[in-house]
Image (cartoon, rainbow, N blue to C red; front, side, top):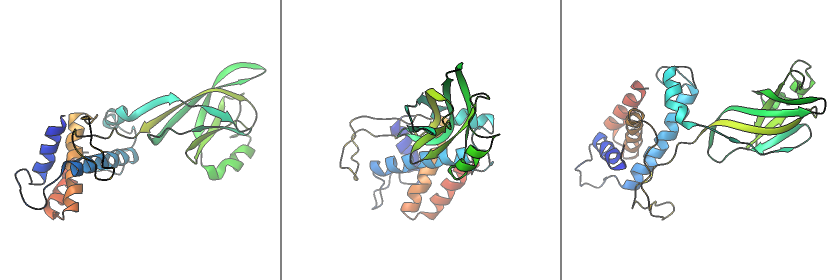
Length: 232
């Protein structure tokens, strides 16, 4: 969907398409509200706080809607003795999985099954014979801490390579020629929304609701919120 169409639809939802009064909607307000709405929509679908209570990959629709945000990239890890750590990418939104190949002097490289665990339970997991890292069983666990992924080895094996699969932040739209009041920088390109048009329609209602709340337009706020939720 073109940004020009997106802007018209948002103004139409707010009944400001031909308005010349004091609360006209500026282009930067549309950009800010739409980008905020994208993140709120994505977080709600991933967590399952939506009309149908469906979260990450709990239905074909969620798989289809959110697949565009799934990203896999190599994770550069460093040895910290008990675990290997790697920095989470800047566009990270939510965990999916991490894949690693591990090695030990006695054996060939082996792909490990890795479970995401709680940082609070690390000492318990390392002590538990059934749950601690095991090259023999090809299983270990990882935690998230200080914007890093920590893959535990208990000094039992070496990690040769790692890949992180995660949900990334949605690409922020930009409208060419629009000046961001926070940075004072003018957008030199037109960046369109990456989602399918049916999802964009839902996000437009969400963005219109955000703007309606900003200008204290109660009817438009209620309509936008209800419509966005009903179509999830």
